[in-house]
Image 1 (cartoon, rainbow, N blue to C red):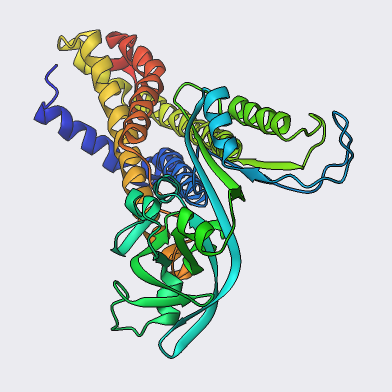
Image 2 (spheres, helix red, strand yellow):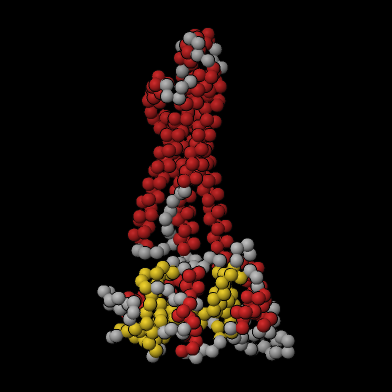
Length: 417
Protein backbone atom coordinates (compact mmCIF):
# COMPACT_ATOMS: atom_id res chain seq x y z
CA UNK A 1 0.00 0.00 0.00
CA UNK A 2 1.62 3.28 -1.09
CA UNK A 3 2.13 5.80 1.69
CA UNK A 4 0.91 8.70 -0.47
CA UNK A 5 -2.15 7.04 -1.96
CA UNK A 6 -4.37 10.05 -2.71
CA UNK A 7 -7.59 8.04 -2.43
CA UNK A 8 -6.55 6.65 0.95
CA UNK A 9 -5.74 10.09 2.30
CA UNK A 10 -9.08 11.36 1.01
CA UNK A 11 -10.84 8.54 2.84
CA UNK A 12 -9.00 9.38 6.07
CA UNK A 13 -9.98 13.02 5.69
CA UNK A 14 -13.62 12.11 5.05
CA UNK A 15 -13.67 9.75 8.05
CA UNK A 16 -12.24 12.39 10.38
CA UNK A 17 -14.34 15.25 9.02
CA UNK A 18 -17.57 13.30 9.58
CA UNK A 19 -16.89 13.35 13.32
CA UNK A 20 -14.88 16.53 13.85
CA UNK A 21 -15.77 17.13 17.50
CA UNK A 22 -15.24 13.52 18.52
CA UNK A 23 -11.84 13.39 16.82
CA UNK A 24 -10.82 16.79 18.20
CA UNK A 25 -11.67 15.88 21.79
CA UNK A 26 -9.85 12.56 21.51
CA UNK A 27 -6.78 14.09 19.88
CA UNK A 28 -6.65 16.72 22.62
CA UNK A 29 -5.46 14.07 25.08
CA UNK A 30 -2.41 13.37 22.91
CA UNK A 31 -1.89 17.09 22.31
CA UNK A 32 -1.99 17.82 26.05
CA UNK A 33 0.44 15.01 26.90
CA UNK A 34 3.12 16.35 24.55
CA UNK A 35 2.37 19.93 25.58
CA UNK A 36 2.85 19.01 29.25
CA UNK A 37 6.04 17.11 28.49
CA UNK A 38 7.62 20.02 26.63
CA UNK A 39 6.71 22.56 29.30
CA UNK A 40 7.62 20.42 32.31
CA UNK A 41 10.98 19.43 30.84
CA UNK A 42 11.64 22.95 29.53
CA UNK A 43 10.81 24.67 32.83
CA UNK A 44 12.92 22.08 34.65
CA UNK A 45 15.83 22.86 32.33
CA UNK A 46 15.34 26.59 32.96
CA UNK A 47 15.52 26.04 36.71
CA UNK A 48 18.54 23.75 36.27
CA UNK A 49 20.33 26.40 34.19
CA UNK A 50 19.58 29.00 36.85
CA UNK A 51 20.82 26.74 39.64
CA UNK A 52 24.03 25.91 37.74
CA UNK A 53 24.60 29.58 36.96
CA UNK A 54 24.36 30.35 40.66
CA UNK A 55 27.49 28.27 41.20
CA UNK A 56 30.89 29.69 40.45
CA UNK A 57 33.59 27.00 40.32
CA UNK A 58 31.71 23.73 39.84
CA UNK A 59 34.67 21.47 40.70
CA UNK A 60 36.26 23.92 43.13
CA UNK A 61 37.32 23.37 46.72
CA UNK A 62 37.83 26.37 48.99
CA UNK A 63 39.92 25.96 52.15
CA UNK A 64 40.60 28.56 54.85
CA UNK A 65 41.72 28.86 58.47
CA UNK A 66 38.70 29.01 60.74
CA UNK A 67 38.12 29.14 64.51
CA UNK A 68 40.80 28.40 67.16
CA UNK A 69 41.44 24.78 68.09
CA UNK A 70 39.04 23.25 70.60
CA UNK A 71 41.03 20.10 71.39
CA UNK A 72 44.63 19.61 72.62
CA UNK A 73 46.82 17.65 70.23
CA UNK A 74 50.41 16.40 70.27
CA UNK A 75 51.27 18.28 73.46
CA UNK A 76 49.75 21.56 72.27
CA UNK A 77 46.88 23.14 74.16
CA UNK A 78 43.54 24.10 72.72
CA UNK A 79 42.69 27.70 71.76
CA UNK A 80 45.47 28.03 69.16
CA UNK A 81 44.85 29.94 65.92
CA UNK A 82 46.02 28.28 62.71
CA UNK A 83 47.69 30.37 60.01
CA UNK A 84 48.00 28.89 56.53
CA UNK A 85 51.24 29.81 54.75
CA UNK A 86 53.29 29.34 51.59
CA UNK A 87 54.79 26.04 52.78
CA UNK A 88 51.31 24.54 52.63
CA UNK A 89 51.34 24.92 48.85
CA UNK A 90 54.32 22.57 48.42
CA UNK A 91 52.89 20.14 50.98
CA UNK A 92 49.57 19.93 49.17
CA UNK A 93 51.24 19.60 45.80
CA UNK A 94 53.45 16.73 47.01
CA UNK A 95 50.93 14.83 49.14
CA UNK A 96 47.61 15.21 47.30
CA UNK A 97 47.98 13.85 43.75
CA UNK A 98 44.39 14.66 42.78
CA UNK A 99 44.95 18.43 42.90
CA UNK A 100 45.18 20.44 39.70
CA UNK A 101 45.07 24.17 40.51
CA UNK A 102 46.32 25.50 43.84
CA UNK A 103 45.63 29.23 44.01
CA UNK A 104 46.29 31.04 47.31
CA UNK A 105 44.41 34.22 48.05
CA UNK A 106 44.52 37.00 50.62
CA UNK A 107 42.01 39.65 51.54
CA UNK A 108 42.03 43.03 53.23
CA UNK A 109 38.33 43.47 53.79
CA UNK A 110 36.65 46.72 52.80
CA UNK A 111 39.12 49.48 51.86
CA UNK A 112 38.50 53.16 51.15
CA UNK A 113 39.15 53.72 47.44
CA UNK A 114 39.46 57.02 45.57
CA UNK A 115 39.45 58.05 41.92
CA UNK A 116 39.38 61.77 41.27
CA UNK A 117 36.43 63.26 43.13
CA UNK A 118 34.69 59.90 43.51
CA UNK A 119 35.23 57.46 46.36
CA UNK A 120 33.72 54.53 48.21
CA UNK A 121 34.80 51.46 50.18
CA UNK A 122 35.30 48.18 48.33
CA UNK A 123 36.47 44.73 49.35
CA UNK A 124 40.04 44.18 48.19
CA UNK A 125 41.61 40.80 47.49
CA UNK A 126 44.97 39.52 46.32
CA UNK A 127 44.61 36.63 43.85
CA UNK A 128 46.65 34.50 41.50
CA UNK A 129 45.83 34.88 37.77
CA UNK A 130 44.68 31.26 37.53
CA UNK A 131 41.98 31.89 40.13
CA UNK A 132 40.28 34.47 37.93
CA UNK A 133 40.22 31.98 35.07
CA UNK A 134 39.02 28.96 37.05
CA UNK A 135 36.31 30.84 38.95
CA UNK A 136 34.95 32.30 35.73
CA UNK A 137 34.73 36.02 34.95
CA UNK A 138 33.52 37.81 31.84
CA UNK A 139 36.12 40.38 30.80
CA UNK A 140 34.27 43.62 30.03
CA UNK A 141 37.33 45.74 29.27
CA UNK A 142 41.14 45.52 29.34
CA UNK A 143 42.76 42.30 30.54
CA UNK A 144 42.96 39.95 33.50
CA UNK A 145 45.89 39.74 35.87
CA UNK A 146 48.82 37.72 34.50
CA UNK A 147 51.96 35.95 35.71
CA UNK A 148 54.19 39.00 35.09
CA UNK A 149 51.97 41.06 37.38
CA UNK A 150 52.55 38.45 40.05
CA UNK A 151 56.29 37.99 39.47
CA UNK A 152 57.13 41.70 39.18
CA UNK A 153 54.88 42.85 42.03
CA UNK A 154 53.12 45.24 39.68
CA UNK A 155 50.73 47.73 41.21
CA UNK A 156 47.85 46.97 38.89
CA UNK A 157 44.22 46.18 39.61
CA UNK A 158 41.24 44.49 38.00
CA UNK A 159 37.95 45.92 39.22
CA UNK A 160 34.41 44.58 39.31
CA UNK A 161 31.70 46.14 37.16
CA UNK A 162 30.08 47.84 40.15
CA UNK A 163 33.38 49.47 41.13
CA UNK A 164 33.61 50.98 37.66
CA UNK A 165 30.06 52.35 37.91
CA UNK A 166 30.82 54.05 41.24
CA UNK A 167 34.31 55.41 40.61
CA UNK A 168 34.10 56.34 36.93
CA UNK A 169 31.77 58.48 34.88
CA UNK A 170 29.57 56.69 32.34
CA UNK A 171 31.65 57.83 29.35
CA UNK A 172 35.02 57.51 31.13
CA UNK A 173 37.43 54.73 30.16
CA UNK A 174 38.74 53.07 33.34
CA UNK A 175 41.58 51.19 31.59
CA UNK A 176 44.89 52.88 32.42
CA UNK A 177 43.35 55.13 35.09
CA UNK A 178 44.77 55.29 38.60
CA UNK A 179 42.82 54.44 41.73
CA UNK A 180 44.01 54.84 45.30
CA UNK A 181 43.36 51.86 47.60
CA UNK A 182 44.11 52.40 51.31
CA UNK A 183 46.42 55.25 50.34
CA UNK A 184 48.33 53.29 47.64
CA UNK A 185 47.92 54.00 43.91
CA UNK A 186 47.15 51.17 41.46
CA UNK A 187 46.59 51.23 37.69
CA UNK A 188 43.33 49.70 36.46
CA UNK A 189 44.03 47.10 33.75
CA UNK A 190 40.68 45.31 33.52
CA UNK A 191 36.98 45.30 34.36
CA UNK A 192 35.18 42.00 35.04
CA UNK A 193 31.76 40.59 35.77
CA UNK A 194 31.33 37.17 37.45
CA UNK A 195 29.61 34.51 35.36
CA UNK A 196 27.94 32.94 38.40
CA UNK A 197 24.78 34.38 39.94
CA UNK A 198 25.12 33.40 43.60
CA UNK A 199 25.66 35.95 46.35
CA UNK A 200 29.35 35.13 46.62
CA UNK A 201 29.96 35.75 42.95
CA UNK A 202 27.78 38.84 42.83
CA UNK A 203 29.82 40.40 45.64
CA UNK A 204 32.79 40.15 43.31
CA UNK A 205 31.14 42.84 41.18
CA UNK A 206 32.05 45.25 43.99
CA UNK A 207 35.54 43.91 44.53
CA UNK A 208 39.04 45.08 43.62
CA UNK A 209 41.50 42.35 42.59
CA UNK A 210 45.25 42.87 43.04
CA UNK A 211 48.13 40.50 42.26
CA UNK A 212 48.51 38.23 45.29
CA UNK A 213 52.23 38.97 45.70
CA UNK A 214 51.66 42.74 45.34
CA UNK A 215 49.00 42.84 48.04
CA UNK A 216 51.09 40.84 50.51
CA UNK A 217 54.22 42.90 49.89
CA UNK A 218 52.51 46.31 49.82
CA UNK A 219 50.42 45.74 52.93
CA UNK A 220 52.97 43.66 54.84
CA UNK A 221 51.10 40.34 55.07
CA UNK A 222 54.23 38.18 55.02
CA UNK A 223 53.77 34.57 53.88
CA UNK A 224 50.31 34.20 55.36
CA UNK A 225 47.51 32.79 53.16
CA UNK A 226 43.86 33.44 53.95
CA UNK A 227 42.21 31.02 51.54
CA UNK A 228 43.09 28.38 48.96
CA UNK A 229 41.11 27.90 45.76
CA UNK A 230 41.69 24.33 44.58
CA UNK A 231 40.49 22.28 41.62
CA UNK A 232 40.71 18.54 41.05
CA UNK A 233 42.21 16.58 38.20
CA UNK A 234 39.92 14.52 35.92
CA UNK A 235 39.29 11.07 37.33
CA UNK A 236 39.62 12.08 40.98
CA UNK A 237 36.61 12.32 43.29
CA UNK A 238 36.40 15.90 44.65
CA UNK A 239 35.11 14.72 48.04
CA UNK A 240 38.12 12.39 48.49
CA UNK A 241 40.52 15.16 47.43
CA UNK A 242 38.88 17.56 49.90
CA UNK A 243 39.38 15.12 52.79
CA UNK A 244 43.01 14.52 51.75
CA UNK A 245 43.65 18.29 51.71
CA UNK A 246 42.15 18.73 55.18
CA UNK A 247 44.17 15.80 56.53
CA UNK A 248 47.45 17.21 55.19
CA UNK A 249 46.79 20.70 56.55
CA UNK A 250 45.64 19.43 59.95
CA UNK A 251 48.73 17.28 60.28
CA UNK A 252 51.03 20.13 59.26
CA UNK A 253 49.48 22.55 61.73
CA UNK A 254 49.02 19.95 64.49
CA UNK A 255 45.25 20.05 64.62
CA UNK A 256 43.33 17.04 65.98
CA UNK A 257 41.70 15.08 63.11
CA UNK A 258 38.31 15.36 64.85
CA UNK A 259 38.63 19.10 65.58
CA UNK A 260 36.21 20.33 62.92
CA UNK A 261 36.04 23.94 61.82
CA UNK A 262 39.63 24.88 62.63
CA UNK A 263 40.39 24.50 58.93
CA UNK A 264 37.19 25.21 57.03
CA UNK A 265 36.30 24.02 53.57
CA UNK A 266 33.58 24.25 50.95
CA UNK A 267 33.27 21.73 48.12
CA UNK A 268 31.20 23.10 45.22
CA UNK A 269 30.90 19.62 43.70
CA UNK A 270 28.58 18.54 46.53
CA UNK A 271 26.09 21.22 45.58
CA UNK A 272 26.42 20.29 41.90
CA UNK A 273 25.55 16.66 42.71
CA UNK A 274 22.52 17.73 44.74
CA UNK A 275 21.28 19.94 41.92
CA UNK A 276 21.83 17.20 39.33
CA UNK A 277 19.97 14.65 41.47
CA UNK A 278 17.06 17.02 42.08
CA UNK A 279 16.54 17.92 38.43
CA UNK A 280 17.03 14.34 37.24
CA UNK A 281 14.12 13.45 39.52
CA UNK A 282 12.06 16.34 38.15
CA UNK A 283 12.77 15.22 34.59
CA UNK A 284 11.78 11.62 35.34
CA UNK A 285 8.55 12.82 36.99
CA UNK A 286 7.83 15.02 33.96
CA UNK A 287 8.23 12.08 31.60
CA UNK A 288 6.08 9.86 33.84
CA UNK A 289 3.21 12.35 33.90
CA UNK A 290 3.45 13.22 30.21
CA UNK A 291 3.79 9.64 28.93
CA UNK A 292 0.85 8.62 31.13
CA UNK A 293 -1.22 11.37 29.56
CA UNK A 294 -0.10 10.35 26.05
CA UNK A 295 -1.06 6.74 26.73
CA UNK A 296 -4.46 7.88 27.99
CA UNK A 297 -4.86 9.88 24.79
CA UNK A 298 -3.79 6.88 22.72
CA UNK A 299 -6.43 4.74 24.46
CA UNK A 300 -8.97 7.37 23.45
CA UNK A 301 -7.74 7.19 19.87
CA UNK A 302 -8.06 3.41 20.00
CA UNK A 303 -11.63 3.72 21.23
CA UNK A 304 -12.73 6.04 18.43
CA UNK A 305 -11.00 3.76 15.93
CA UNK A 306 -13.11 0.87 17.27
CA UNK A 307 -16.20 3.02 16.81
CA UNK A 308 -15.05 3.99 13.31
CA UNK A 309 -14.51 0.35 12.36
CA UNK A 310 -17.95 -0.53 13.68
CA UNK A 311 -19.52 2.32 11.70
CA UNK A 312 -17.68 1.30 8.53
CA UNK A 313 -18.32 -2.44 8.79
CA UNK A 314 -20.40 -2.52 5.58
CA UNK A 315 -17.76 -0.47 3.72
CA UNK A 316 -15.00 -2.80 4.91
CA UNK A 317 -17.08 -5.78 3.79
CA UNK A 318 -17.46 -4.28 0.32
CA UNK A 319 -13.71 -3.71 0.14
CA UNK A 320 -12.98 -7.31 1.07
CA UNK A 321 -15.61 -8.59 -1.38
CA UNK A 322 -13.87 -6.60 -4.13
CA UNK A 323 -10.51 -8.20 -3.27
CA UNK A 324 -9.01 -6.02 -0.54
CA UNK A 325 -6.49 -7.99 1.50
CA UNK A 326 -6.46 -8.04 5.33
CA UNK A 327 -3.12 -6.18 5.24
CA UNK A 328 -4.64 -3.31 3.27
CA UNK A 329 -7.51 -3.06 5.77
CA UNK A 330 -5.04 -3.06 8.66
CA UNK A 331 -2.97 -0.40 6.89
CA UNK A 332 -6.02 1.81 6.43
CA UNK A 333 -6.89 1.73 10.14
CA UNK A 334 -3.25 2.08 11.20
CA UNK A 335 -2.67 5.10 9.00
CA UNK A 336 -5.80 6.88 10.25
CA UNK A 337 -4.73 6.29 13.87
CA UNK A 338 -1.22 7.57 13.19
CA UNK A 339 -2.55 10.68 11.47
CA UNK A 340 -4.62 11.60 14.53
CA UNK A 341 -1.87 10.95 17.08
CA UNK A 342 1.05 12.41 15.14
CA UNK A 343 -0.78 15.57 14.05
CA UNK A 344 -2.12 16.12 17.58
CA UNK A 345 1.25 15.38 19.15
CA UNK A 346 3.23 17.56 16.76
CA UNK A 347 0.78 20.39 17.39
CA UNK A 348 1.38 19.92 21.12
CA UNK A 349 5.14 20.00 20.54
CA UNK A 350 4.96 23.26 18.57
CA UNK A 351 2.58 24.84 21.09
CA UNK A 352 4.84 23.76 23.96
CA UNK A 353 7.94 25.29 22.37
CA UNK A 354 6.09 28.57 21.70
CA UNK A 355 4.89 28.61 25.31
CA UNK A 356 8.45 28.14 26.55
CA UNK A 357 9.54 31.09 24.43
CA UNK A 358 6.83 33.24 26.01
CA UNK A 359 7.79 32.05 29.50
CA UNK A 360 11.45 32.87 28.80
CA UNK A 361 10.53 36.35 27.54
CA UNK A 362 8.34 37.22 30.52
CA UNK A 363 10.79 35.69 33.02
CA UNK A 364 13.67 37.71 31.57
CA UNK A 365 11.69 40.92 31.88
CA UNK A 366 10.52 40.11 35.41
CA UNK A 367 14.04 39.32 36.61
CA UNK A 368 15.50 42.47 35.05
CA UNK A 369 18.91 40.84 34.79
CA UNK A 370 20.54 37.55 35.80
CA UNK A 371 18.20 35.34 37.78
CA UNK A 372 17.39 31.81 38.84
CA UNK A 373 15.39 30.92 35.70
CA UNK A 374 17.46 30.87 32.52
CA UNK A 375 16.80 29.68 28.96
CA UNK A 376 13.97 27.14 29.40
CA UNK A 377 14.09 24.76 26.45
CA UNK A 378 14.06 21.12 25.41
CA UNK A 379 16.87 19.61 23.39
CA UNK A 380 16.43 18.00 19.98
CA UNK A 381 16.85 14.46 21.32
CA UNK A 382 13.95 14.98 23.76
CA UNK A 383 11.72 16.13 20.91
CA UNK A 384 12.69 13.07 18.83
CA UNK A 385 11.94 10.72 21.72
CA UNK A 386 8.58 12.41 22.25
CA UNK A 387 7.69 11.94 18.57
CA UNK A 388 8.82 8.30 18.74
CA UNK A 389 6.53 7.77 21.73
CA UNK A 390 3.73 9.29 19.66
CA UNK A 391 4.28 6.94 16.74
CA UNK A 392 4.40 3.90 19.03
CA UNK A 393 1.29 5.05 20.90
CA UNK A 394 -0.55 5.64 17.64
CA UNK A 395 0.43 2.23 16.29
CA UNK A 396 -0.56 0.42 19.49
CA UNK A 397 -3.86 2.30 19.57
CA UNK A 398 -4.67 0.88 16.12
CA UNK A 399 -3.81 -2.77 16.84
CA UNK A 400 -7.15 -3.91 18.23
CA UNK A 401 -9.34 -1.90 15.81
CA UNK A 402 -7.20 -3.03 12.88
CA UNK A 403 -7.45 -6.70 13.87
CA UNK A 404 -11.21 -6.34 14.24
CA UNK A 405 -11.46 -4.70 10.82
CA UNK A 406 -9.29 -7.39 9.20
CA UNK A 407 -11.50 -10.10 10.69
CA UNK A 408 -14.72 -8.73 9.20
CA UNK A 409 -16.63 -11.38 7.24
CA UNK A 410 -17.66 -9.74 3.95
CA UNK A 411 -20.85 -11.84 3.69
CA UNK A 412 -22.04 -10.80 7.16
CA UNK A 413 -20.85 -7.23 6.62
CA UNK A 414 -22.83 -6.86 3.41
CA UNK A 415 -25.96 -7.94 5.26
CA UNK A 416 -25.34 -5.24 7.92
CA UNK A 417 -27.78 -2.36 7.87
